[in-house]
Length: 355
Ligand code: ADP
Ligand code: MG
Image (cartoon, rainbow, N blue to C red):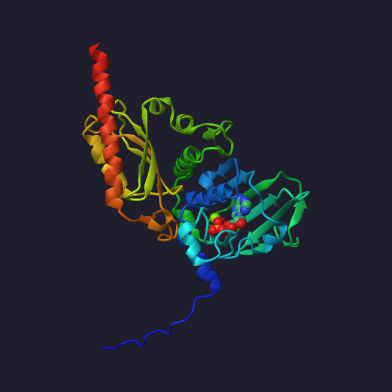
């Protein structure tokens, strides 16, 4: 048999590495948007406006009224691992911001055209800069790459155009803009419910009314009503749990036994991050199956705060999943609490119909 000699091992060119890494963090437009929303919230914004074209593939624009970015930081803004948030690895255990790796804007700049317009409160004007492959770049051939002074309010506007323009296979894999827009609305809806004290709006280009609009002062229940409608909001039980043994607190809005729909809506936040957990969702679903008619499903919003030293937020490139200690025990406490309260509502109903 003819055995081929092994090929030599070589380092990939840096731009190839960056593009691969970016494609892992940002698989769909919604992942870029999540990073942008989290940056705006980190910047202390109380207003977020989102504009979307072609499911976010053509345009994703987010405007906030946060603290803005210093003009002198603009040259390094989209470099990989530049951040104003994390300094030492140990800080990861007490991290109070969403971002920490300084990867998001860098990634986006490698797979899209990115423009930033930003103004801090100490600046008399706003500054605009465009980026390509991690570096400031001239917006058009023949122009300067340096930040340009422009008019603008305090805050930041990030414009992401032509996502995946340089990864044609990825770009082609998106069949339906409306499917991507639905994912975007789902995500914005989650943050709009969770981030009290922040106004949210999300609009598709060309639409006259936004797909989501939540005012700054709305409380959690009002926020759920704005996003999911009164039919859900009118049937929710508010629950608060705090448990020293497992080191967590939970705020819950769980639908009662009168409410039953075809598909579960499960909005989960762990330490203020929108995450997925099939374990928690499964436990919640199976608990409700004993209260709801066959095929019926609940609505549950769960905000879990777990002591930071029990949580590892850095397990997933997209930060979609987080690991935490005593998962089973925590799920047990939460589902018991829901079960008890679902039972209560049921008996009070029977009681009321009897009188
Ligand atoms: P990270 O959020 O992990 O720090 P990013 O790439 O998302 O990394 O952002 C890099 C830096 O850019 C942030 O640390 C922050 O200083 C700044 N920044 C990004 N978006 C905004 C924004 N909307 N408002 C103010 N500063 C921002
Ligand atoms: Mg970030």
